Length: 231
Image 1 (tube, one colour):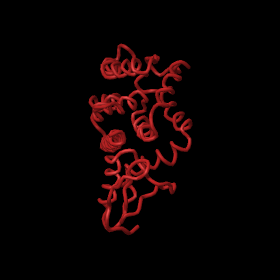
Image 2 (cartoon, rainbow, N blue to C red; image 1 turned 30 degrees about the horizontal axis):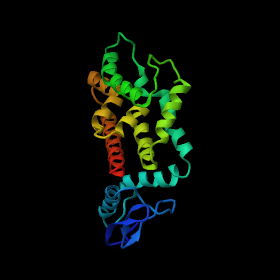
Image 3 (cartoon, rainbow, N blue to C red; image 1 turned 30 degrees about the vertical axis):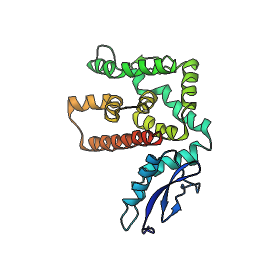
Image 4 (cartoon, helix red, strand yellow; image 1 turned 90 degrees about the horizontal axis):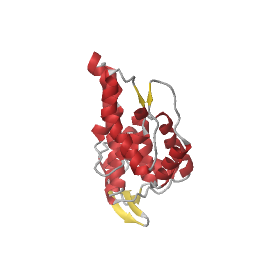
């Protein structure tokens, strides 16, 4: 698609802030007004449009896609959006560890246990921990506690959390990434501990290393989106 606008601006509107193209408010892909809760997030959205050349690259609109998901998907059916995120708690990476005699187990304990304990204390839940590959579902009480925590999040935080949790394969890591001062690279490294461990032992495969970089970039964008939305 050819670039069809000249000026990009950000204006306060009823209900929040909106990026404008030649003075006209941008709409979501679902045709709703793309109104976001903070000027900072609106500026991130505007920068994506300013960065376009003569041809518009749809793949470059990372923040737009998350904002549209918040408005078009989460806002329309919050229970379903919460259920989609909550399902990651049942197979959370941080709860499934190697055998205690395996050297990887010590790395997992070091990186994962503080995050799990922090999540448990913050939300009043208790996660089961498993050594090996046997599936052990979380208790109904834990699931209900997590559901209540997710229900307190606004639509934009839930949109960011969907991306964070799926990339980390961990609801615990995703929730931690929403906290003030979250270090995206450190949290992603924790979620990716097993793959990084294998790479340390045997070396990185080129394609695997490239995939890791792309996933980390997407994870970092989601953290930035959540931070901007609450600014």
